[in-house]
Image (cartoon, rainbow, N blue to C red):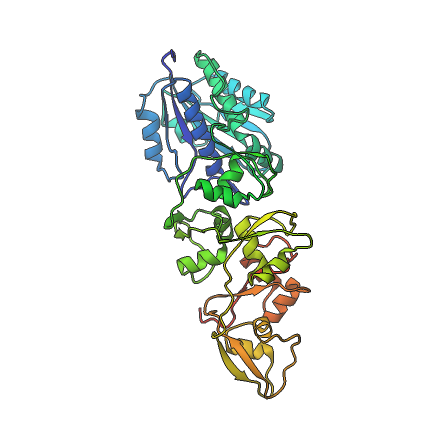
Length: 466
């Protein structure tokens, strides 16, 4: 195909240890990587010589990024540098920045095409270096002196309307950029092969069957639950029989895969992304606490489906099923990627292996004057409810001389695992352990004070030496 001498360098802004703009669990670097990879593949498909600064979540130095921009195709006005970014600062809509050495034609065409796809058009503009108004503010323009370099901001990561648009329509906006550039350089624009109107690859599809969960589908295709949700724009884990899902192309997740902690990561988020649990990550990596460091390497356990498959019957509840199999409600929800406790008759659930304490894992204790469940639990580094459950006690009253079996659960870390019981509140649990509600919420990444029966909570261990 005749590309009229134009060559394109696609840039994914930020990356690796540099997340760019962040709002909640949304990171600029993730959006820009998704946009850049799509843009790169589209220009290849259209027959335009194209390069990309990064196609993975890697950290690039300024020199490395500039080396690709300046040296891959030379340094002239027919080298288009398209740098993908997400804005921040409370505004709304798309912007395109163009360098001092060019006119606004291409920038305006790009913004108009993004606007044609439903995004608010803010402006095209130039930005100068404060200490030298004759130079461009952005180094990708300032230090690529002869190229046609543009910075494309698709929306504001901290605006609630743009957040929704970026999550659902980003690739459609990128396709608008591809269309505008194709028109500008004078090539025959064609719709993408095997792509839908939102730019999603339709060549690898799966139709949801009865009993399917996002976790089981992800496990079958060796991808993550999070990647399935992102490529299909799913806002929950609920699936419908007959629903069509796009299966992303990913490297298989091996039993010893490592994940490098990024800014804004929590154990809960990482566990959710890989279809595992916080406790499994803690145990698998021998972590002393839930605190993570940027750049820290975590081993991701391979979760195998349990041999037990349970079909939901009339009257079933998650609490009742969990009680039957001696597991927690949270364990069933994690394994099946359930976002709530609602069940459907005929629904298929995978049941994890029981992690209850064996019959021999206890010590015998005789109640003495002044003893309470709390004082005994503290002495043995366990919790009052664990003693009550193990001894089938229905009240907290003890009798002098009473024989108790104390379960020997390992709790010599900075947390205790507590399972929510009927009638529990965060205030009551916090009061029992002599801590604050805020501490529990922060440790467990809770966004509200609502609790679910059977839910596991991490409680700071006030008896720890750490």
